[in-house]
Image 1 (cartoon, rainbow, N blue to C red):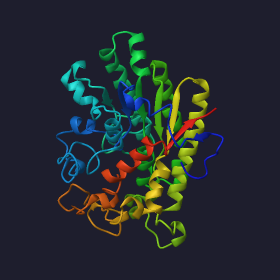
Image 2: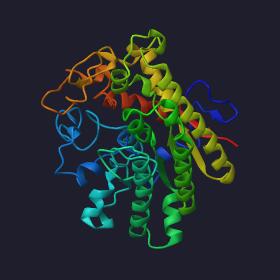
Image 3: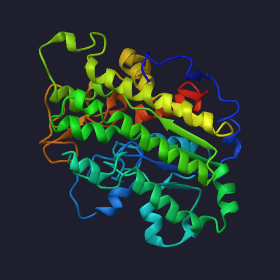
Image 4: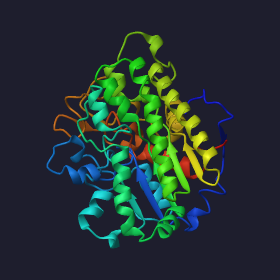
Length: 370
């Protein structure tokens, strides 16, 4: 969320006495998560093991797992830190549990997120001329997976509602790839902006369906400041200094677009909250969390680089689409914890740790009001 957000939509909470803190004592029985590469803990990896996607190779995973796991980072993701904080195991990929064909493998956390996933249906985006190199598993597909799995976890509707009422459901971040695929294909920001209402509607529809199934606590993150990502700074590099934020080096017009998405998302969340006053719908402010890194990098230990990727194939921002992290032509920095960005698109474990810490302390949480 950018600074343009209307204050009447959201009441900013500095602490979470009713939402996070008591649940950390063991009240959450499960975590269910939906999203894209920000959250995927291995679904694409499992479904595409014969593929050669660059994030299937070292140095991905080196910091914590010491091997690639399908996570698009050097280590853990935000969802991993949330699970650790709540005393639950790392959220396992749905496709791993499905391949084992037994609900007995369920240990309190299931992840339906998929690298490359979009909010909008893949066929719709293809008809719009947008190409996705990774998956056709949209948010709707992930919801279908969830519905298919649910009966194996709870054999009656009332039991399922009981399970979901005591679960934390993370919906997103999602929608970023709908915009990424279009922008990287050369569509104008004005064209891409027409996607926003459709993306928001799909997120809203998913949230409503999850509530009908029994979800009572839903976290819905907004988009990141994409104007700070090396992939975009490389693609849209310009000598026009007015296009950049002089204090951060980020592209203003892309960050304004991310703010627009986040504002529209919050408006919709407040409307859904009005329909379901007994449900906790929580907006998570990823945007400002990450902007703090760019404004005060030393405070977070990011002394190696801010707008440069730790792992990449060279160039002003260490991002090269022909030599991406994980390929033989790319190399990684010595200390990823000193960098905000990992591979030009995703963040380092260190950045994700700081985001999770802010979320769990209540500093990024904004509870929807109506």
